[in-house]
Image (cartoon, rainbow, N blue to C red; front, side, top):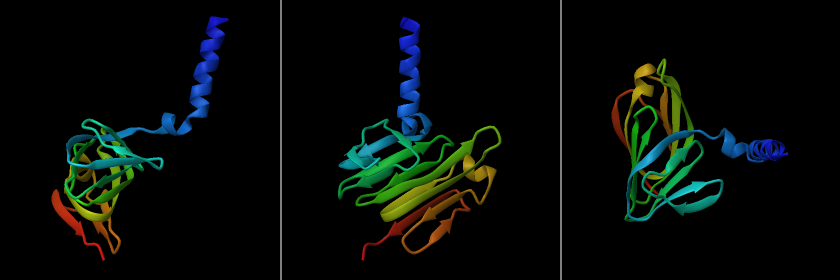
Length: 148
């Protein structure tokens, strides 16, 4: 009976929380300064040092905030004050260095030092802004989106 209850519990967890089961860590917060927030599934909370970052997360910083994220391919992304960036897509295979990266900078500043994903394919990284999509070909760059 005990094994049956455990089996039912595991089945219930796996089927009732598909978003949790399907999510995979894409990076983590290595540096957090000032007021900075993580928005996941419409829940906004203060981002903590070491917080796991998942695809579809949004990072938001206030006037005194900044967040540095290291992704699983060793890409380093840093947001400046008054920034909002949405992690739209990240997929990476460490065996063959194939994958893709798409972040949407809605406002503020974003600095990136590309990691293994750009070494595997020079077209793998893109940054979307309100007015353009930037293809990343180099290893370091800075993007700034001004508010209206």
